[in-house]
Length: 349
Image (cartoon, rainbow, N blue to C red; front, top):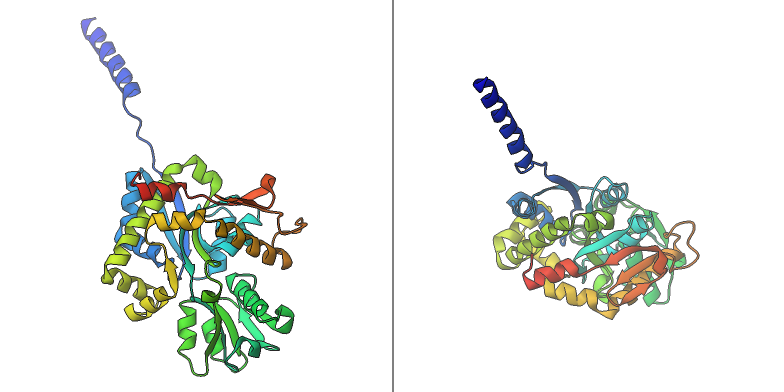
């Protein structure tokens, strides 16, 4: 009887101990997609170097960083819910996930293009020479926006050219053919094409500074539910930024990973306004100019039918910035929220 009582007490104590023991839980898993561009190569380095994992471990989560060779496909996958975050330009964030009904937040504003996006001609040395030509580009992307803004600046419009939709994966090869005489695209493709004979850059993003903005977009619902994802991504980003700015070997790694070398990568950086410090990105996002830029972007998008069939005007989709909302406050689908970058600036991550 004593043995039985002792056995029962032992069993009871094991049960009570199990109930009081800390729960062993599986880490939450998140997925980030990116494509090759000078301002997004830090994600490749952060993944390979273990910096992303270090910050994910700090917040007890898993972050899978996945490269896409096709930029548009990466955004489509994000919009479909296959990824929690994705690198994309501001216009594409509006016209693909936001227009698709996915409430998205620009968690990190990493840079703006300051010459990295360009219109290049074979036959002609000024943008006015594009009149009547076919322009190969990723239709309805940032390259399309660049072309439209360039034509507008010289009193022309898209009616004066013929846009030919071409995947970014095919643009370099296309320019080598006799049929293709003009392209609008981004680096590193710009650098490759400009190395070819008879290539002339006739307009670039330095002529519309601050309008082509490169971001990491995160699903707003996911971010609100899991703020530690935002903290881990932002923390990793600014650690990478510090190494990128200070260490030549890091820039060389990024150059090789993007298909060029240190010199080629640094030439692309020279035409990119990188926000190496969080405080500079926060200042940019809080500037009233951002709201004005997004109005330009929304108007272009509406004119091209990119805001959805139900869009009655350019303000159909609300775009939230620290300076206010452009568009419908009841239909906000794109948000520029500097809170996490502010945490980084203050050392609070």
